[in-house]
Image (cartoon, rainbow over all chains, first blue to last red; front, top):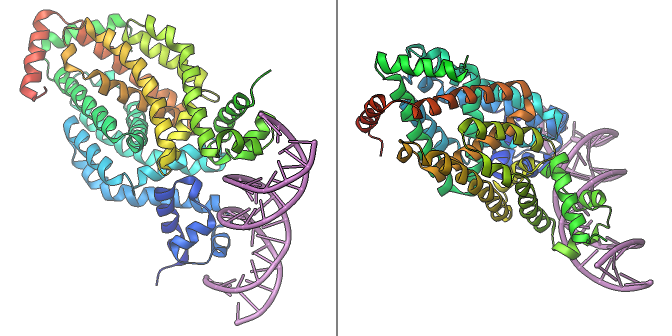
Length: 209
Length: 209
DNA sequence: GTCTATACATGGATAGAC
DNA sequence: GTCTATCCATGTATAGAC
């Protein structure tokens, strides 16, 4: 026997992914969950609070599916490959779609902010772990602010995910272009000591930290 | 004397930016425009079509403000600086906010797709022009797919803009991190012929195009 | 805990007077 | 072109029976 709370949370996640925030009403969610509409208010008090709870739970659940794979990534190419995979499976019904909808809604509804921020932070933490491991062995590791980069990577990913929704071809091309760029990072990492010294001094002259 | 159509379009843009897509109803927009609610349907047929038209016109107007500055950018640092500026002024009331809302809505409402796609393409074109100019003088220019990169940069920017709405500190940190990374590009560009040759062969071995 | 019924607000859209 | 009035669907939320 499945608890009604869980049915409603699942329903909310499905509706958010399939119909977006504008479609996420108590009636529609309850119908998707196969329960009565009044139960939304009995269990959660309001639609916002249901969405908030769904955002939290959904992110945790989805992240759990990838956590193991995140820990096995050991090159930038592998990280990008995992990103592509995530992109393919999370799009349409996954957590990134839900987070994107909630993120857009949170811009004008302060009540959604905490849950979205928490959800994002969970993903940030995961990516941070990978980046830290990848840069640990790099001689130029101190050039990167890992937490900052993790935030940049993840929110850029959300932007790309949204873009994919209106132009799949363009989004694929954008991802390909980033993949080409990523080669640069590994290449720079693989430079010999002479070139590396030149690069470092160049950076110092450029005013980087 | 201002035409009612224009009043409604301005009203729609303001409402989209201030209250998001969920708040963008015919009544609210008409009220913001100071005109009667029925005029939305008389002039545009439906709310969707008003939003669509507002998206197009708003993007053109806003882009016109920056077009000149885009053409004067001649380094990556300058491009990033312009991005920061754009970020600061467009956030809260600007076109990026509007596009982000429409983009989120378009994920589940096909009627919004064409207008959003057009709006995005306008920005892409602008950024493409800059990137093409910046990479033209680079010896490693053929490593980049400029149109793809422009799409990646712009949609990443939208993701960051949305993230800023729920965590201003985190977003600032993400931008700083990207700024550090961008130094790498100019540094690579500034390498001497010897280091450059090494890099190029490394890339060939890595399997890049 | 769950259901029915219901109150009440908001939103899309149209008809018809001016 | 613009306004008033109105219809009807949808949405939030609560009361009360079971």
